[in-house]
Image (tube, rainbow, N blue to C red; front, top):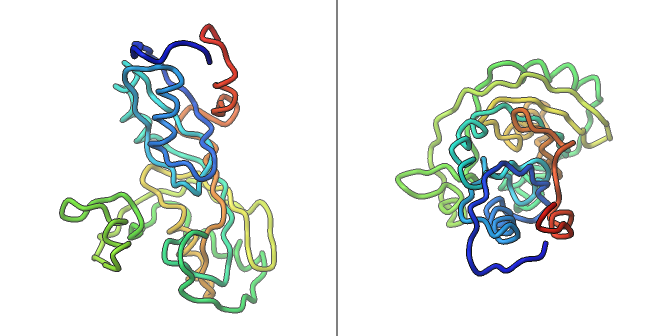
Length: 226
């Protein structure tokens, strides 16, 4: 996208960004703001650097609607790898425990209804929630653990998409505030082997889905008019 970047422009709208692997949500926002030369912007709920997919970015006056998208239901696909627990609940954390896995798809399918509907989740230490003014992940990186109150979330639908001997791909539709990492960990614990996620893609946020998302490379190739 051509154009001078000296003076910020007043641009209003919601961009459905396709967040790539390894990029934080804030870095994604700043890149898009730079690309559009937008004066004001905000994202609508963090996606972990490990996660990819739909990240609505609100520019200008559209930031007034960011809370609506923060509160919206979400849909994801994730790979839960069984037999290994990690400090972060995903593939980026240190391995805490490994166990041999002896389970079938039928065992997993029989267990999923227990984690469907309204459930209580204990937020992970590696999260942006705050305790006495400090983010939990900052405390976790210093080796600290604090008590977290469980939070009620809703899993509207959860189904296996693909099965391997030590892992399963799940599609999950859930309410705001759901931690997919924690969901996978809890399912793994219930199976007796532990689990962590190795991939996570957000498919939907409220009314916005994967069909309308645009990558940074696509945006960069566009003209100002486009």
